[in-house]
Length: 175
Image (cartoon, rainbow, N blue to C red):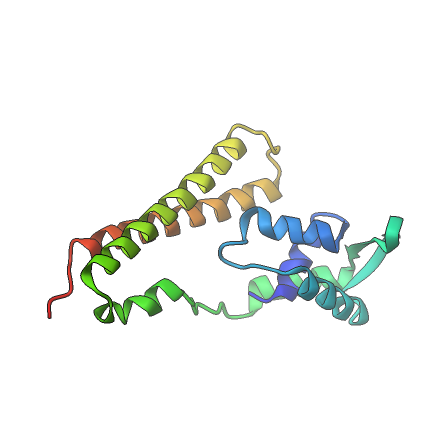
């Protein structure tokens, strides 16, 4: 996913400032697709220049709210339906696992315990958010339904990574 299309998708929900967009990214996607403020503002400038978004309003301290244009909506829909999905996953924990053989056994066990705790906590945080969504706290519209699907993906990924860390502890590396 490109930041460009993520921003367009979020703006399809309604006008938002760069700050609002960063908060929305952080709300669900931060662990899997972080978006820093400077990159968001730079991309909003490019989207504006390309006619895919427009400034909707100006607020205090130079704050701008952006809205998606018809061209921007057509672009995000094209991306969703016509662009092949990039299935590349860059997971540093798996890259590191390639070199576990270089760690002392006690250090590896501590590392895997910490990884399992982290992933379990992340899954629990996503589960709590899902429970709030399921209770109707955020409404029941199509955006909420799509976000719920995203949250479930996060739950399942983190649960799988927690199970992987536990499995790895049960399979010590033999000299």
